[in-house]
Image 1 (cartoon, one colour):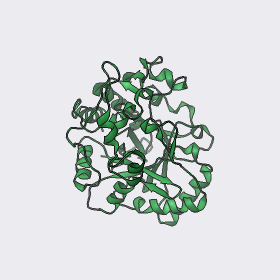
Image 2 (cartoon, helix red, strand yellow):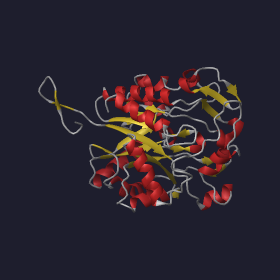
Image 3 (cartoon, helix red, strand yellow):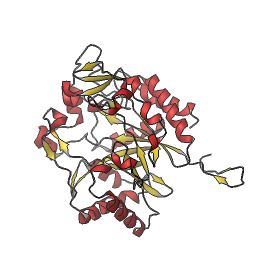
Image 4 (cartoon, helix red, strand yellow):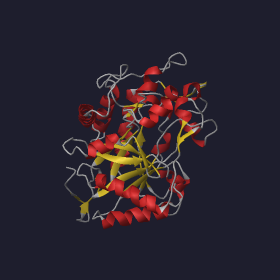
Length: 367
């Protein structure tokens, strides 16, 4: 059992940390004034997803929801249904994207509602999407809608105070009592060592045993002698033309506009053992990627997503992670990125195919 210790050959206890399956969760399924102003009244992620059209023969668009419908995250019933479905098929935590722009918060209602509703069964953690919002989501190029600023220590303190009620919630995902927090772009933080030291100290002062900080591995920080964070995750997404990772996605794209790669070419990088980086790496599996609902022919995608390929990737990732000393985590990108084609929720084409593939892959790995 995960809560028991195996006896090693030396008579000591051997770590048997449970394997956590953590799925990234997009909160943009409720209207906010900023999106109303930028894109029109009532804008949500569904606006792009429902308007998508196929751009070449065999292009799987639009991807439309099935069992859960076009839900609104302001509804408690929707949140409960999502969690019950995720837990049924093996997801142990949803990782909510969290937006903090120098004191400005956006799309915070789902995480705030969750915090204010302790009776809602919902294991979770937060991921800081520390990146400027630009018009690229709607074909408006690099127009900056909300800039990601880093005002300094006073703002970092206020940010931690905002996070602390989540960190102390009994449903929050922890590693040995340390709250898990994900940083999307560690390289963009002007003084990462200072921020990390400050937040670790504030966590200790708040009575926590520390923090378990995870960052996206796509950056120079992960190769430094002292990477500051506890672990890294490589979030596979199709690269732009000429990117060093292009070969891992099948080399020459099938189409140039939109830039299209085969789905079966996406798993090579995370199976490498850390690529020499001096940091623990957790694997990430991907049920698909297609941001053409947002970007049209300027988008990129993985063609012909396949639950069987996904299942095999889940099994490999889970087995690899279980061979590592704890903590053990497999990330899933993503639970509900409908306008980015990265979806575990049931849709009208696959039904529950990717959910069943996740469950079978975990079972095959003995999880």
